Image (cartoon, rainbow over all chains, first blue to last red; front, side, top):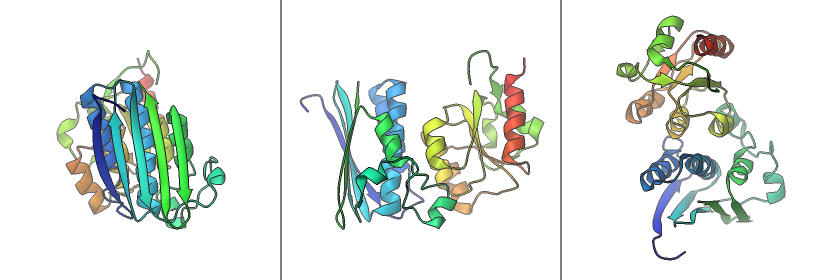
Length: 141
Length: 119
């Protein structure tokens, strides 16, 4: 990424359901202020929300780095947490490891990662069990 | 919802359906473009559209986060459910209109749909 890049980092705390959604809402507002087109913001907001909720539900802590250039909006999501054992399975719609309690709250529908992929022009996921998970999400402008 | 529907003011829906207003009663002028019903947050995040009223039985504070992120017109808690204290607090803070009703999600969705399809 070259000159003209907007860059901002956000922190997410695992288990903090009260503040969950705050980072993605803030990202949406920033993108709106920058003047990104509404359909792109909608896709990025969905991706950011799902990434944030995954960290709230599963990770100990996490970070989201938002970068905006004239060509692309990029979210780099890094968490410290249990990681994902089987990424292929985790990417399947309907698959979830959420607890009964989380499911009762309307989480854990097994739509999180698929929703991110659907709304990204580029999506990469890497994970190490016992360490954490990394997502790269891009929407081209 | 598609073109040809009429935008309805939130206050008309509140009045006609006898909804209780939990937060931001001053914002009855909010325009409603349609509705969405569901209790799975990922589904609502993916499919609800800005300006819609969201009917749900979820009462926890993340409902507010979803409504704020999607710029929803209001949230209606169905089936006699009431918001948790931190849900109310967050809705006040984040400017989200919370409504409640004794009707089921099905009844509410049907009635709101009829109002928006009218004319």
